Length: 100
Image (cartoon, rainbow, N blue to C red; front, top):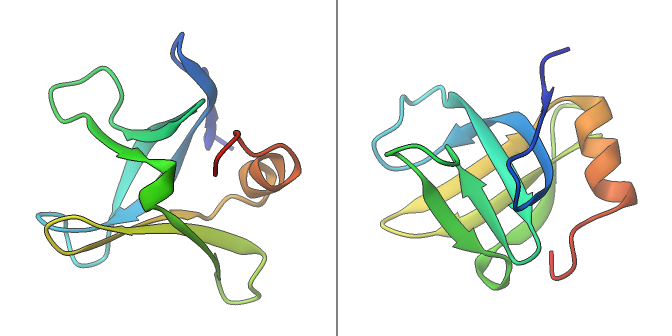
């Protein structure tokens, strides 16, 4: 599964998830992300990079069997990153970054 990727230098964990938010397709967009010590970075190290501090994020269950979870925040409308890969979701649940 390609959901786990090599994180950038500042990241604790990197991966791919399904993102919903302003300017994205209604069905969401598959995005690369990094979880750093203090924030979520979508599209890290690109011109589209979008950074969200953990203090602004709510963690909620997601998916049909609620084994997945989503990171939700507001910023020019509601946003969500769904960690829909079970292995990736399990890694984040078992060892979340401080502050998440």
